[in-house]
Length: 413
Image (cartoon, rainbow, N blue to C red):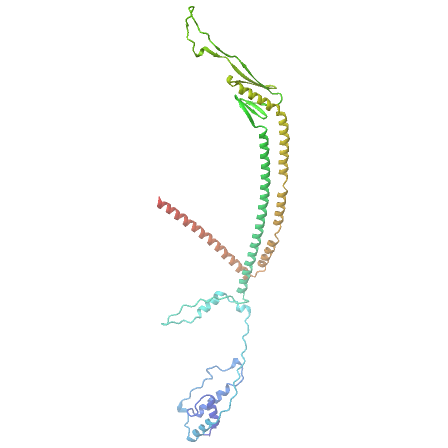
């Protein structure tokens, strides 16, 4: 057997942390050789695996026995100081290259399924645990992420358009309300003037007095449905005829009363007639003879009213014409309404905000890719389904309430 360099073997044993008294020199040589291989500068792709770096155990029967001289030499070598070895330089690890966009375009559902499927199954008795649900977001710069961002942008544009329309409709409604208020004020002023005209006309034809079915107005006199207009040519007077007489008592030649007089023995032959004449019209009104004074007062009042009838008629016509002109001017004075209509037309023309929002939304939809258009259509379809579901639920609630009311009424009946 050739002599060994105990010093080198001891240093190698000390470097790998092996007891030099317990391991033969053959193992020391093998460890020394494998330890030196760790400092070889090689590419990471061809570096030996951890399995290849493990020290293989050598059966003891294949290890030659050491003599006392070799053992003593190894012990002296182990007691000598060990030179510091240079630290191994780790090979630089190259960063993984960024995968292209098409490689990273993995759908959210596929990634979630893969992560759930790769969860380790464990349990106290070998049962598989329930996989945890992981909220997987779309990868940045992936088509799914861009589609989601596009849908959010379109929804924001739709909200902006709805806001513009709501503001526009609110302004238009307020302007229309002002126009309606101006129209109402105008119509109210016209109606008020017309009512004043009616009161004016009524004041010149109001009732003055009445007697024995004759009704005297400020502009006319009526008797049993006939009308006579008053003017200065009207004449009226009362005529009384007849009187009261009694029947004399019948006596015999001897002076005896042959017949006892009764109440029919007194005869009232009085008559009171009122005559009212004007042109071709004349009223002959029989009156109660006992009311001669009242008839006289009525006739005097009639003549007084008839005397100023023509002047009143002229005054009436003048005032009525003025009132009618005022009504006509009011009807034609629509300046306030026209002003409010101009404001309304100006507001209705302020559609630039709506048009700009529409153009932005149309441009987004026009420039959408296939994936983005499909995602937008799917989002709108879900929105329609939500609205439909809400309506169905509302109808169901109404039906349930109505059914409950019917059952309550039946139970009370």
